[in-house]
Length: 325
Image (cartoon, one colour):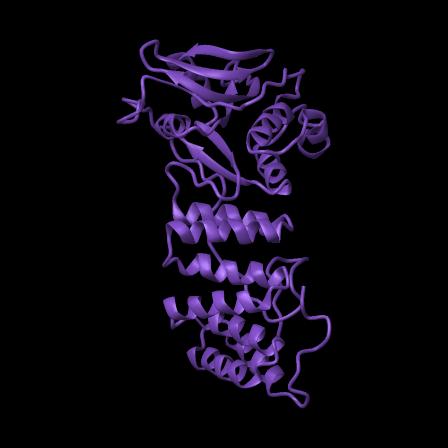
């Protein structure tokens, strides 16, 4: 039996969702950073290779995303992105639109929050899109800029913002403007580059976003990047298997699912997915053994596991045509 990896898209058979129940933006209460400079940060730091695009009225979202995408290695301009991320009704761009836009172009969109995280990423050479309110909390004037550096002795942050490149703003003023967006920031990273303060679940969540955007080949690379940092990550191996399957690479998908079953031998989903791939590869006996193990493990997806086993044990013993995504 087949469960699409994402509603409305994905394989027609056998693959189960990798579930990570977190929200993208989960904003909590504002907490003021008492000492924002991270330990070991250099006195000054400026990210190299970040282009500057002057931001037209209401077009700061496309311009900020274009700067970040250009830095990540893509050739793209704000006018290319405007139809994707700019909302005329909002007279601006929503944060979710920037995240989706980055993913659509095969880049990791990794939200961050807080001054220490921001400054740590800048010290590591990663520009950060930041959302500020340049007016009052009760009459907001939202504005995206790209943080590209800092100067500790001067207590300043350096931004590409509006019509000004390399704008220097006192850190205290910047924090006041930034706090009004819950100190929201966004890293737009190449697939093989982890954040300086990478967290496993957040990276896997960002990689799942690539899959939802139909960027399965990019997701393969991002999951492989996760495994270089967290080699025992069950979620990364399961996600890698699903993404490899979605790109038609059955042999490597099977290898990833096999590792997932080794890391978590109680996961019926991993055994079910392994069974599906082995079956499509013509390895019916091995597929049957994996499917039986999934059924034996049971759980809330037991009926799916039973259907997979029934398919493999069916009259033909071969997967139905068109089941590969």
